[in-house]
Image 1: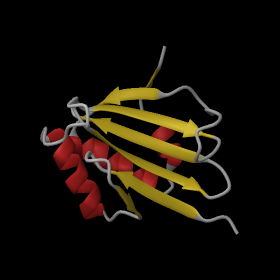
Image 2: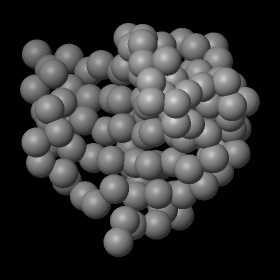
Image 3: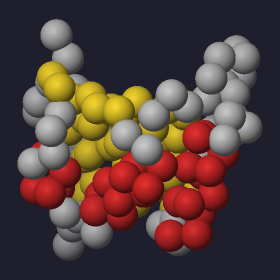
Image 4: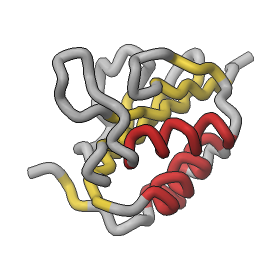
Length: 119
């Protein structure tokens, strides 16, 4: 049977399986509050990934400047991109909504947002 999973990669690089809404809020607060930096000292980001053990994976990365990147992959190993990465900028509340939709498997709602394709 195919199992779905959700993983939050916090700004400090730690992974949280099946994160709660409070954990999503805290991660975004760290990102938007400027409290996060990557190991190399660059501005930090946090990523929420949703997928299935035997296939598709989606991820939404949120950066400190409010930039959001949405990616669709054939599998967890990111072997085949199913679409070009898409970008937008938004505030913390909107980023939380996108993450909540991803955690709820509402990929169609995420796809319908006003994304800009990478070009």
